[in-house]
Length: 203
Image (cartoon, rainbow, N blue to C red; front, side, top):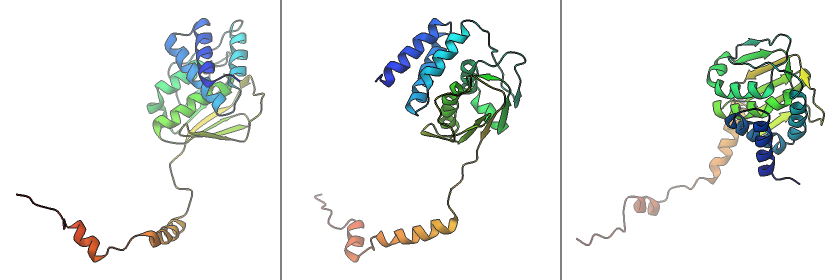
């Protein structure tokens, strides 16, 4: 079994060999490491995409808006992911953004997961029928853990979710009241000790 370090290093070097800068290649290495860590087929999809990229062109994106359409060519998921990371503070203000035509959309997933950690918010990511909830780069919930993901998605949504508790205020109050039984009641001896009793003054 290949280690995560080997996965990251090989992904980085393969990206550089294909023409990405060393900085871009490092971002790819980190992201493919994350995909494999979270149980998604990162190496397979990156390899398939790079084999296809040798023969075909893909659209690059610079400025990300609320609605994004590449025209005839699908977006490159690597350049899109890197720009998403670079522009995340501005994109977050949009709350939602939409894309048409992204090649190998699963490769965008780890970039968005890292964005979730940067902004401190959960991110909802959907392409076609696949849905993902990205939790601060700690884990990814999904309705789809298939081995084979589409090589192109035509309808993509990315939403920034508001942070809120998953429980009611009443549940919290009841649980907190129960926890109060562990509190230590302050005795007279503790009060005296806390006030400085027992300290020796040698002057």
